[in-house]
Amino acid sequence: MVSLSIKRVVSVFILRPNEGPRPVHHQQQQQVALFRRCATMPTFPGHWAGISGSIEDDDANPLEAALRELLEETNLAEIFGGGDDRGVSCLRNCIKQGLHVDISSDRSGGAFGGRIIRVYPFALTLPACRLSSPAGDDGVADILKNTDARSSSMWSNLEMKGTEHDEMKIMTIEDFLDMMEPCVPALKLAFHHATLGSYLNLPEDIRTWERDRVNGAAFLARQALTLAAAHTNAGRENTHNLQSSFGQPSIPHSIAMLRPSMVPIVNLMNEFDRRMQTDSDSDRVGENLRQSLDEEIGKCVDLGFETIMRYYAQWTLNSPSATVFAIGTFSRSSTVKKILERLQEESNGVKVLCSQSTPGDEGELMAADVPGATLLSDQKFRQYIEQGKIELVIVGADCILQEGKGIVNKIGTASLSTYCKQKNIPLICCADRWKVWEDVYPPGLEDIFELFIPDKSEHVLIPDCRSKTC
Image (cartoon, rainbow, N blue to C red; front, side):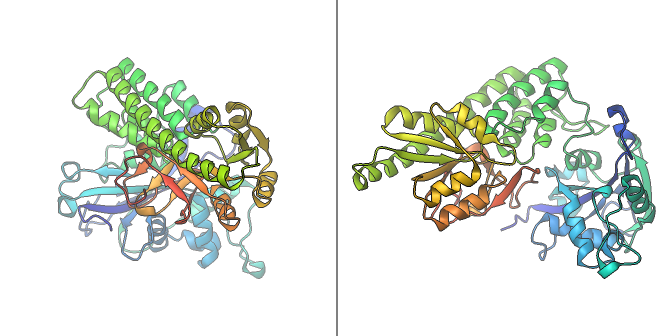
């Protein structure tokens, strides 16, 4: 059930990136379209905004609300695909969601009855999509071969629709971030969230951390705590205020928006900022949160170990002559690694089989992490499942939605879950409490992640969790 104390809205930033190769320092010369709200609007009249609006009861999720607003307030569907379903499909493929932004009543001027405004921000980059062909061979949208021409054509044809805005303005990102004209609350912060912090001026070691696509959420969360503590101490920034007048958030807040699908990072960074409001020692805050994370991971390891040992005990009864208890795993998880190592230490015959986990091939690293593990191609891994050579499969998670509404993990987990279900092979998902997502909607998904709904036959293990997920 959606909380009535929160007003949920979407905000879409339409972007035109640089045309052709350019140096990194020209990044902020890219352009964004802003729209001025009409004087008759009940909230924030005369303020500049993205394409925005409330999430309605009929909207399944923020993405559907964002697409609806784009259709109502711009002609992009017509530009992309002649105004039919092809245009909407193209919009859906081009749009990316960032981490939501909460705006308190003191920052919103009491709008919407003083409720917290939760903004779900999106970035829509034009050149990634199709244009409709005037000739319209079979009505199929053509992809223009020249990226510059595609971008320029879309940009020049972009128009407003509806009655919410009275002016559209094209600005460079740099000018937008420096603009002093009235904007809806936290517009610049929402932009940074929508673009996953791409335009923030961040230290290089944070950027290096951001590019890590081979380690799991718990591992990266520990590193994030170290980075947050170090750079908060070094800069002695004001972490009491998450947004400066120029839209630059605190270091912990910035780290959170870089990896929105990895929920323990988001939760820990938000908690870091919260604790810094009463404790100015960032090293102490970071260390306390590391201890909390390690304790929760330890509980998760205990629960995972105990659960698998029950299967192991049943296996020894049912197959007294068997010598190998094969456990399969997918992708790379430091928590799963700890569970597997403990199983190897405290039981006989445990064999670990790692699926290669394409794309990304994280399974190769997992096989190197776990002593004696065997790497299998994804196809071979499924053959082993089909042939009954794997007793169970264990995976980690990057996000657990409440009330059993879904799990976010590496692409490929959903199809593996379905396959295990078809072959009657138990799938166990282990996660600590820092991975529980509190919002009613899933976080924005980075390209390497997907959402799947666990079946009742699957185990989702979260120690001491009050959520109905457990």
